[in-house]
Image (cartoon, rainbow, N blue to C red; front, top):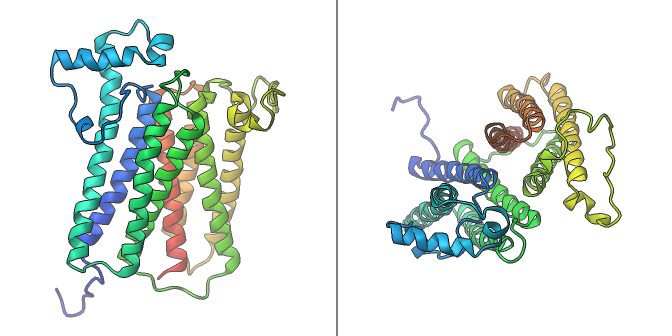
Amino acid sequence: MSPTSKKPNYEISILFWLVSLTTMVLIIIILGGLTRLTESGLSIVDWRPILGTIPPLSYASWIDVFEKYKLSPEFKIVNSTMSLNEFKYIYWWEWFHRFFARCLGIVFILPFTYFYLKKKLANNTIITLIIVLIFGLIQALVGWWMVKSGLVDNPYVSAYRLSFHLCIALIIFNILLWLSLSVYFGKEKIYNRSKFVKYLFHISLMLIFLTILSGGFMAGTDSGKSYNTFPLMNNQFFPDGYHLNEYGWKNIFENTIAINFNHRWLAIFTFIFISSKILFLINKVNYNKFSLLLVLFLLFLQIFLGILTLIYSVPLNFAILHQTNATLLLAAMLFAYHRLIYK
């Protein structure tokens, strides 16, 4: 190290661990989306936190898990002609999703225990990580609670529980990303930032978060397949059937037409609001322009992917790119906000 170089105020091992955790949470969000899009989430009808790590290893064990699946509403109502090889395809998606979640838990707990015992973690970092651990435990329970909703009478996972599952995943991702940024850049506040600009970022983060959650209801109810034209729906701005009396206030959560309409126009409003904010901020010479341009790029890409996903009736490739980019957009906005308030 040269005499003029500055020693980082963090340990590389801790930063690497936090970045690894953040990346793994991003990957498991993507895996969750793929599990939903491939309709694989109900293929494993039991929850064994330890023994479930081991997949079927023989023909007899495959027959056993397939026979259990045959008792589920999804097989009886939707997949009654499914072969064993077709079952293996959806089984492996769900198994890997659960296996990766278990790996994530191990990658969290073992280094955390080591760093804690070695007294390498600051007190506020310990508290933050304990909060992450609590959310992680809740997430595991919610994941099984979500799967159970499709194992009784209805062969479909509850969109409410799916969106709740997604919400917790995003919270964990945001906390870990913020912690990683704070460890790397430090948390020396910039006190001359405009409160108005901070509020703009708060609103932007909230809009992205809500738009992603509305996308969860789109996925959970297959609403993306209800109308595949843009910007109009059946040549109408407000389509017929937007409000159905039998749903009442639940129209926004259960009526596929309303869900589709609300998601697309919430996304457009979010796009207009954030792009206008960035154009306003980009002229400020004392602000990190790279972070703003990154948000702007991902924002345009997200709208483009959303339209392609919609007009092509939710193909797997566009749909998963759309979901992945949504999470990256949220991450970019959080990064831009961190660069706003900390040096």
